[in-house]
Length: 159
Image (cartoon, rainbow, N blue to C red; front, top):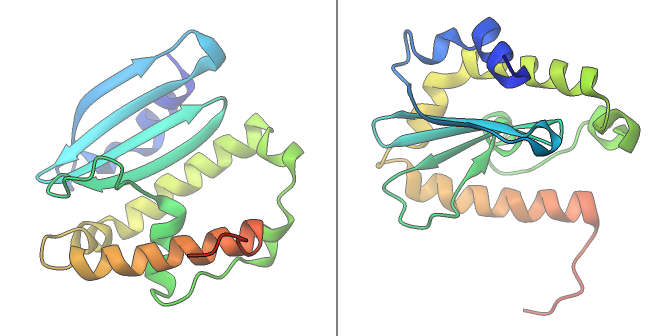
């Protein structure tokens, strides 16, 4: 059994019961140990991926016709904390390349992400409802720009 499957078996049972997500797809790749699982609940899709040892959790409302409108859990967490401002914590500012490449750190991060999902999944489902999504989408775009600016500095591109 691969690492993602073990992680979901140990910490992800809440996705199916009581939240009603069902698995729609899974894959394992030979290269880099990459693997992924997709879930769906009504119009909400969730994909969990381990790519080169790094876990990511992303949501997409199926009624959004833009196939690239996936929102990562970091952005969703920041939205739930404060929908008007993306703020990096001191720990997030200090994360080093060595830590990002540390499989033990990534596994703990995956467990933490599942714990956050377990506590906040109903709120996330509500965020991506058809009635809330138009406003959420605009605020997420703003948060994405703020995150990019904090992580990489201001853009030199003129708009």
